[in-house]
Image 1 (cartoon, rainbow, N blue to C red):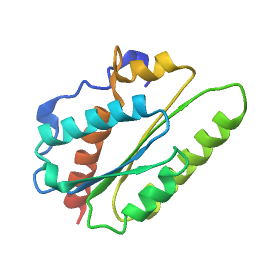
Image 2: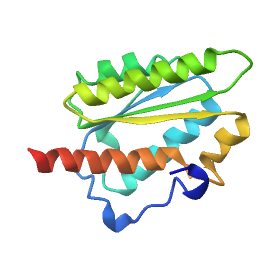
Image 3: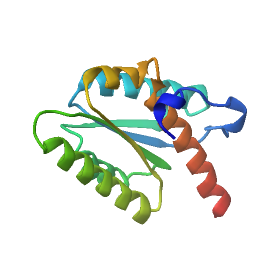
Length: 162
């Protein structure tokens, strides 16, 4: 569903399992830090609002969005229940945007499919800075909130499968 039809921060709190006892890692890109910092803050607030203890959240930074793949892969070695990868790529004048978006998406998808814990995709890809601002706490909500809810639900899913 297109974001313009859905506020990223809207969720039914009653549909979110308790995050109590869950350990969540967040790997966040330093590039476009105005945006990624706001996404991180949204994720942190939503995790703690839903029962995840601050002591059970491990935040690590990497230089750019492409490095999220390596960062998330390394974090799978930690005793975590889920990893959220947060980044922001804004279209420029060269094909670099396409390469970074495609490579990062493929790498995070591969990790999500091959690791024993969920790796949550929190990369926003926009045409301009305003679209990024709209998705990190602006008029379209905060993708960090959505990622945190997804992480909690996927940890709960994994626990119910086992």
